Image 1 (cartoon, rainbow over the protein chains, first blue to last red):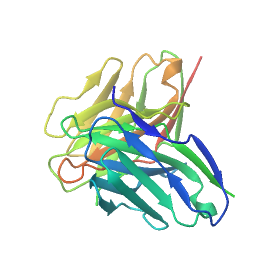
Image 2 (cartoon, rainbow over the protein chains, first blue to last red):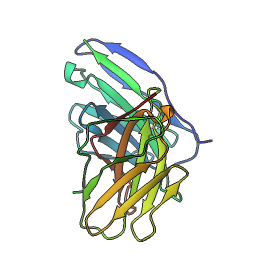
Image 3 (tube, one colour):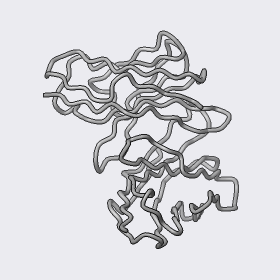
Length: 112
Length: 115
């Protein structure tokens, strides 16, 4: 089974802290994604990556950056966390031949 | 840009009933994929069903089936003989298979199955 693993299930951070959310997939997928999930808004794409060191902005990139130094790992960085970044963060990777998105179990981030 | 709209924020039915979740989308593409994902309280996103736009036949997976109306840009999910384990958030999603294959999601419908 494909596994997408997010390093933390729950995180509590202070305003202004630098926050790292880590995601690792074990199926050699080229494309990886970071989504943010908020009630009533569904899932919104923050950033995605289609290869090592390659990244593109999604629909809501402001306040976030990403890093992909190895194919299996895609990190989301909040340079200076703010309270409006309190949310559920979901990482995903896609199987190109199956057109199927595999998700991690999510990180619920609270910024106080 | 593609958009996906789920107009039912919440739905509630009795166990064993049939329920239909609505989804509409907007695109100028002719080739694309549509998905329904389920997110139970565990938060793990689970693929329920997938439809390829060039296939006229509606996809089915056991108790789950879709009504795909390409001209109307409508993609509803029907759950037959609903079970308590179907209680979850349901998300409709669109994907253009070219490029980065990113999914565009709707707002979600919270479905509760009552005993």
